[in-house]
Image (cartoon, rainbow, N blue to C red; front, side):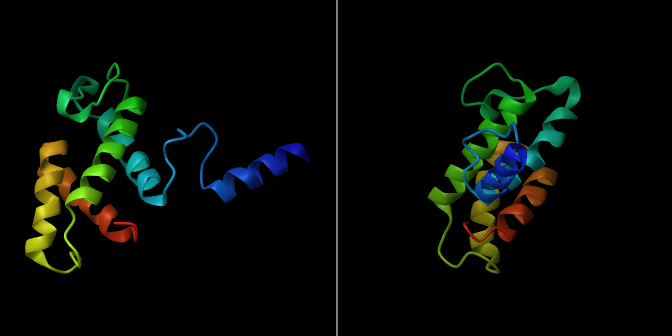
Length: 119
């Protein structure tokens, strides 16, 4: 019964077991879970310095740091009423490109951001 109560608390908090505590919003969680596979399949697991705030380049840490950096950046630079406005959307995409350095990933991450109401 204790295990069920613990699972209920995790579901209510929106976090899976073992998920980093910094993933406090649905947007952050969506970014984190979608960045992990991409970072893992990069040649040699290579993570560029611009993707890391700190740490050793571990994929889980890199995904967390990159998700937090994207979250913070988008919240700082997003123009009002950006959805559906190509010029305003491009402002966000340019900031994403500076972090991700991949046009393909910018488009993929942009769709995630666009689906999240917090952005």
